[in-house]
Length: 189
Image 1 (cartoon, rainbow, N blue to C red):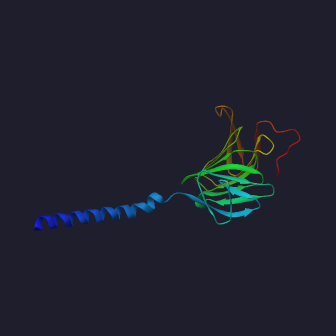
Image 2 (image 1 turned 180 degrees about the vertical axis):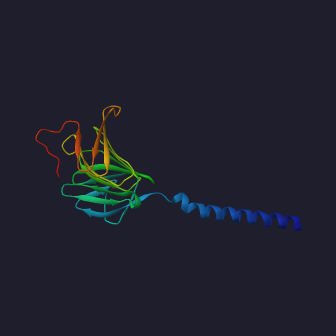
Image 3 (image 1 turned 90 degrees about the vertical axis):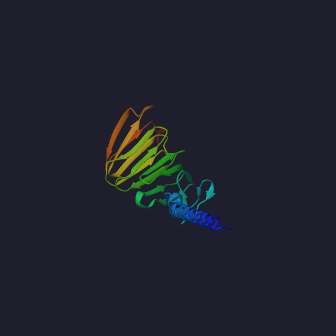
């Protein structure tokens, strides 16, 4: 092999090695995505149809179901946490700066979000959206057939209607509803 071919081969090997190093360095960043962790599981809880256990990781867009007298607490790190209360079926989605719960069937969730985190819940009756830059803590309960929102900390907007055309502001210590509850049904405290 002549000197020129050896030099060309050496340069090619160096380029390939440097490219593979870039791929290895970039891979952890690309693979890094927000995940949650099941802090607590009580009773019958499933995640995406599989039996849930405490300590398991939760990815965004997971479906979580709790049975009677069952619950789960999902830590989302700096975003906050979501408590899935008994007899709930919901989908949990999250990004680096937001938490979203879609109530798939009747149930109750308690969302605690950190400052500057967008937190929302979607039900058949509307959307509950945490507003402001402060921490928020609120419960959304659909177990009576309507949407009941109770705010412990922060502020939540309850947007109702086909185009969210009615907005109810709910401050800490207050509650409001959307839709019609089944007769005689009262949300749990």
